[in-house]
Image (cartoon, rainbow, N blue to C red; front, side):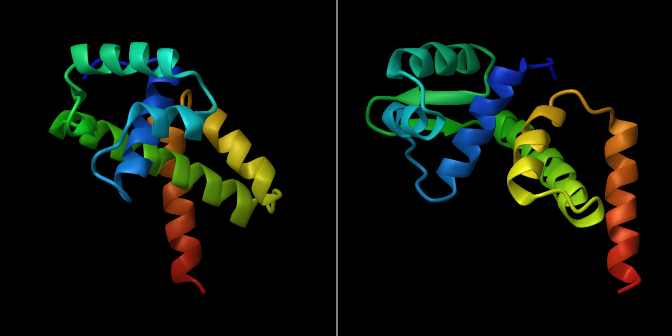
Length: 127
């Protein structure tokens, strides 16, 4: 699995989240959600298609491949763990926790992420 840039990870995560509500995600949907131009989204999704992470069709829109779905789910899970840790454990304001989680998810080590996840699990068990 090739390491993606933070921008490409954000595209994958956005497609993943949008496709939960509508399997036929369109370039315009992604552009509106990310506040980017359609041309930028087209270039990025072409790159993701070249890597085998999305498929593009004029009729069906943009959808995640099996590998793309797997990577997007991992990225989304990282974000969720970090955001929850910042918000619930460190009591950081939800808006700040969301923004920071989006930054941290691209650079956090697996060891740190697993430690956060373990801590969250233990604190749930103790409640």
